[in-house]
Amino acid sequence: MDFTEQEAKAKEWRHVFVIKDDADFLNAGVPKGTRGRVETVGNGEGTQAGSRGAEGGWFVNIRFYPPRKPHGVLITGIDKEQYEHLLQEADRVAA
Image (cartoon, rainbow, N blue to C red):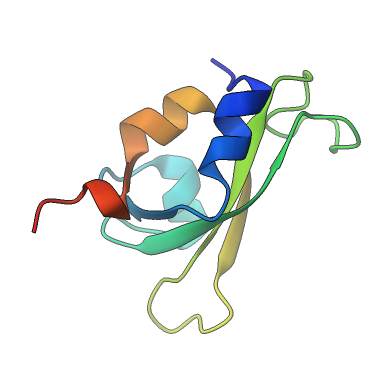
């Protein structure tokens, strides 16, 4: 499920935590508990064939900061379903 343009743009610069392990995230070195920030959003135009979001729906790109990777790991093409099931916004985390 894709974001609408308005939903995706509203996520820009949001801070998130990974709340569930995911095979794609783990392969990129991003385990549960890793913090990240939505850096950009897009709608699939100009993305590589076969990449997430390549069908033209809106998605977000998040830079995660796992241990021992000071420059972070950018995961692109995260759709609404992945965002809602794998991530939690930092401002929504209970204190």
